[in-house]
Amino acid sequence: MKLSASWRKCLVLQAGITLVFWIAMRWLAPALLLVFALAMILGVVWMARSFAIDRRNGAGALRMVLNMALAAAGFTAGWGFVLPAIAIASSVPTQGVGILVLLAPAFGLFSTGTMIHLRLGPFRTYLPPMERVRQILAENPGPYLGGAATENRIAEAERVLGLTLPKSYREFLATWGELEFRMRRFLGIPATMDPVHPTPADFVGATLEAREQAGLPSQLVVCATRSNGLRACLNTFAMRDQEAPVVLWDSASRTIIRTLAPTFAGFLRDRLEAVLKSSGKAFVQQNQHEAW
Image (cartoon, one colour):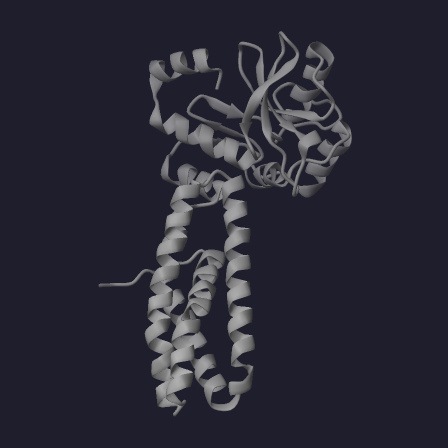
């Protein structure tokens, strides 16, 4: 059976840890408890950090917990055999071997945290939102891409609007400029955009127009529109960790109806996946009732 590249990297990583441990057993035995403690702390920190980031991007909590638990159990069992074997080979007393068996969970947690942190093994099955977007666009021909926007053009757009754009939306602009995928358009910076005279066809012009005609608050940035007066907007007032949620703004009532996604990357991924799952007239009718 041929191993995937991610699993091969994982095995190389584990082999490296084993070598370091063997060296420590032979020449740095007094420092082993400290090594175990640091390994456990680092593993837990990596797992907690990755869990928080992926939850914010829309990953399923139950699936992640099960993956972590299975990986930790597997690695703990593996280290439960490997560590004593190395200890015996290094002529460690029997009592010391027993202690290593009890400390195996520390390396189990470290191994699991490392896998999650580096996106190896089963944790590669969950793609961050923007990677999933790239995958969808690569696998489905026909999307219209406006062309990458330069940093200067993005900075000029921020200056005109008087705010800072979220990280994932800046990445969208710097990668594609703007996007249209199967009749669904996401506003950005077109190749022909004039920052001095923006139009509703770009996100700057659409935002300025909504501010003037629909009372759009200054902290909202229009990133997609519908013919029924609904606008998907970045709420920069709620910016956190360089990301802003995407909210639904109703021009008629001049209020935020609800939050569509915690980040623009998540919003874009969700909309593209919805388009793939639906098609034609049924999709249009469904979204006339559901707004998005």
